[in-house]
Length: 265
Image (tube, rainbow, N blue to C red; front, side, top):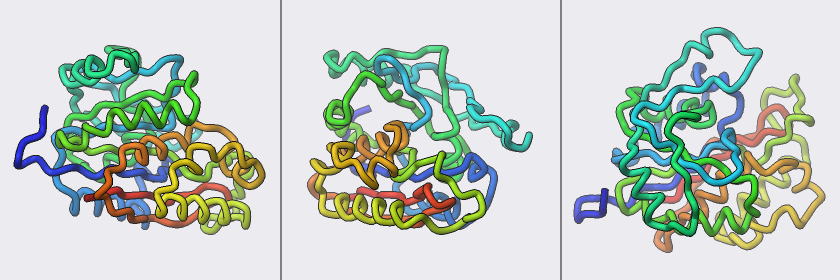
């Protein structure tokens, strides 16, 4: 794929995915995911970065028919029966890997597929599963700054009709979850989410890339990197002309932020 005069610059979207049950429920969060599919141009391909595929090295799915991975336990059987049979695009995956050899992106032809971080969100946006999708892994060996620089080199994808979707949570602390607090967040979680939201609006990517050095409430909000990193990937692909908007700007269970971000020309 390449840019043509009729190819719009696609948005880059970060979605707070929350509970896997959102995949089969209808609520305010899933309704807003559904609206994305109704309001943005139809992409040629979806490029997804999920919190739930961590690897040693960087890998990109490269199989014609990626499997639907049910990487969770303790949920109703209805959730395990969900399939999201979107096709892959091995040829385009190879083009991406070859464009920047220094990124050392490996092609995963059989091990992975689409985990719930990707399909639980995308099935609401494009329920017909008829748009090819690739998923990129999170390399455990990279620093936040290195993840950001890797993603920046992939920002050209947006100009080729590719929709970028990062799926994680800005605030994600499972140990602090209050199962009796379905809506709303702890004060520290609300404060961290609000400040991060402000830095996003200000395009202050330096603060966002170095956030773990701040400690305090940010250490509580981001105790591990994997749910925050998809946000950095989306922000690294920001274009100068992009307008920033937010959706699903709420916290649940005390310590899970559902806040989503849309970068759109």
